[in-house]
Length: 385
Image 1: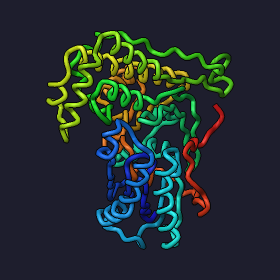
Image 2: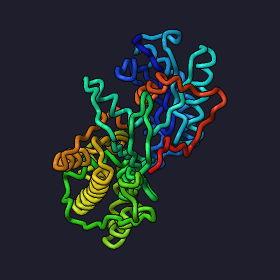
Image 3: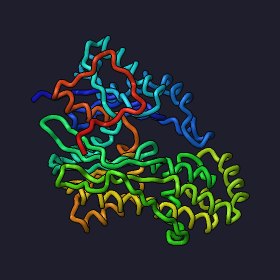
Image 4: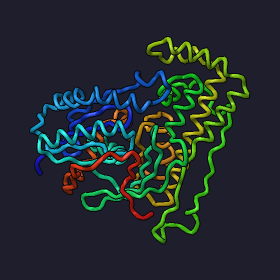
């Protein structure tokens, strides 16, 4: 079969991405323009600013991706773009550009679900290593700043189908990391900062209760009737627990001083953070991360056992967390369940995963009509669960 070159475009949140991937398995280029510096003063992503930054970046990012790949606009076979979910304004920038480019070049355009992109980031990582064998069904945990979802995936012919068997009821896991970091005056994005500081504190110092969720569909559901009990998550409670700890332990003044000092440091390093954090803060950070990781791992592995998954994927921005990876690797091994992660560059939002997820759609000739639009709450294709 002849090689297929797909230009992927990603603009669902605060990173503008473009990449060229060959036949769904070889990255020829993967360019990401991050907006962290733009949103850092606000402690989170500001949708209007994100859209403006995408408008500035989309053309040079795509041009660089094409140049890095040694491709021309005429030599690519198709274009792929994130349709959703994400920020509506941000999605429209990438989608409008991809539509215009596809129309001008008379090339097929493939619409990709951002969540499916994260799942295919794992496949792309393994194929780059030469591993083409994946046993189904696959249970995929997509865990990031905007998503905490569990999908049971099956491959049917050239296409994949997905059943959503769990999601967060409130905050996504990555959102909880960011909000707790902001609460403690540690800056944005919070996940990587908390991950780096956690090893310097006592993870057992503060006790956090994990959420116990009873889903109305859990009763009388099981593999026998082709219905799988749901496994949902909730992280607003632990965020509130951290807030209460800060209030009851009189930490507000120290947090204010830390926030003001870090605001004057352009690119703070680990030593800067450690110098500004007392042991109580480090213990709180470590305990928070421990509770988050334990909840994610325990619930995911329970779901994997219930749905008799043959393989586990852990993907999304939070999948870059070192403790999360270590716990999944250790406890999955005890369960005899192979677990795969994307590399850290492929964990966060990028366009290579969008181009990779588009390849099965290319094989199936599943092209998007030119009148399709962005969908901020686009669900991943469903099967009965």
